[in-house]
Length: 220
Image 1 (cartoon, rainbow, N blue to C red):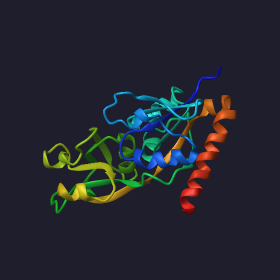
Image 2 (cartoon, rainbow, N blue to C red; image 1 turned 180 degrees about the vertical axis):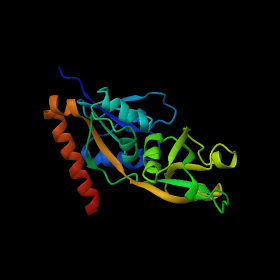
Image 3 (cartoon, helix red, strand yellow; image 1 turned 90 degrees about the vertical axis):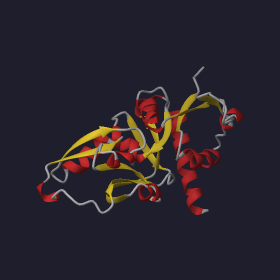
Image 4 (cartoon, rainbow, N blue to C red; image 1 turned 60 degrees about the vertical axis):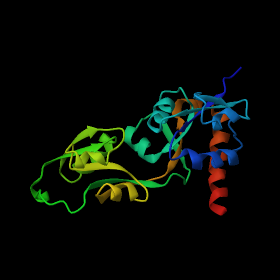
C-alpha cells in the first residue's frame, strides 16, 4: 500500500492564511493540530492519503527537497534562499505577502557609500544578501542570526540588516528604516521533483486543486 503523501507547512506568519487554503483544497488537519499545548509535529488529516508535518519555514524546503515530504507550502524567500534544484514551485498561492528588505538606523551619518567595497549585514538570508550586494559591486559579510535582527545595529553587531518586512512597525520601533527592497514575497506550493514524476497520479491532481483554490480566493 502506498504511503500517504506528506505535506509540510510552516509555523509562523504563513500558517494562519494557509489553513483556509487547505480547506478549499479539501484537506483538514485533525483536531490536535489546533491544540496550542500539543507537542506533536505530525498530524493526520480528513484524507487518509495525506498527512501534515508542521515545521520551521526554512525546514519546509529541506524536508521537501530531500523527499521526506513530497509537497509543502513556504515563502518564496525560502525557495530563493536555498535554491534547491530538487524543488518545483508550480503555484503562487497569493498569501503570506511581505518583502525582504535592507534596513539601517534612521538618520545614520558616516560612511561614504561610494567608497565602500565591503559591508557587514546581520541576516538569516546570507545567499540572497550576498547576491543583492554583489549586484552593487559590494562584498557582504553576513552575520547569521535567526531572530531579533533589529538589535544588531544598536548593539554594534552590524550597521545593516536584511530581514522580512510587512508593515514596517518593528523597524520603526527599533529606530530603523528600509533603504532598499530585495524582493517581494508570497507563499508558494512546492513539490519534490522526483516525487512529482513517481507519484504523479496523486500529486498532479493535488497541485491542480491548489491552483483552483487560488482562483476561488481571487474571485471572492
